[in-house]
Amino acid sequence: MKTLKLFLVALIAITVSATTSAQVTDHSKMVMTKTETIKVAGKCEMCKARIEKAAKVDGVTKAVWSDKTKLLTLVYNPMKVKSDDIQKQIAAVGHDTPKYKATDKAYNALPGCCKYR
Ligand SMILES: [Cu+2]
Image (tube, rainbow, N blue to C red; front, side, top):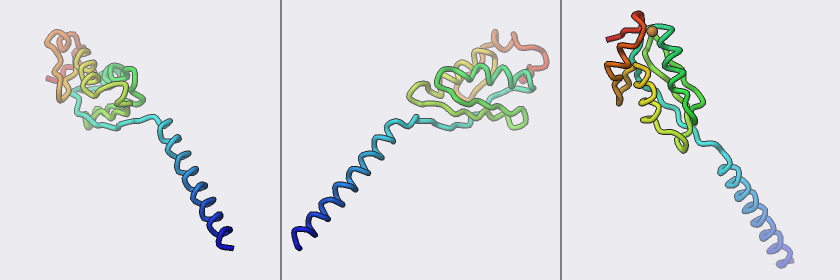
């Protein structure tokens, strides 16, 4: 009887550990994403289209900018792309970000309605 009890306990232990390791495997398959909100200078709907297009580099799954709040919400895979790299791309098309400022050349190339400075 004692042996049977021990056997049952061992069986449960094995089942539990098997379940746990299966969950660990599932976690490793998950895609890591990071959500970040950054301030991006801009004015209108044209800016919105330009900023979102520039922000959608490889590894970025979502980029939404609001002309009211001037905030860009990013969802990206930090293993693939860094926030700095995304900000560089946005600055390159003429829009200031907290870390990177657009060059005068890029800024001057913006249409009149988009001049935010
Ligand atoms: Cu604009």
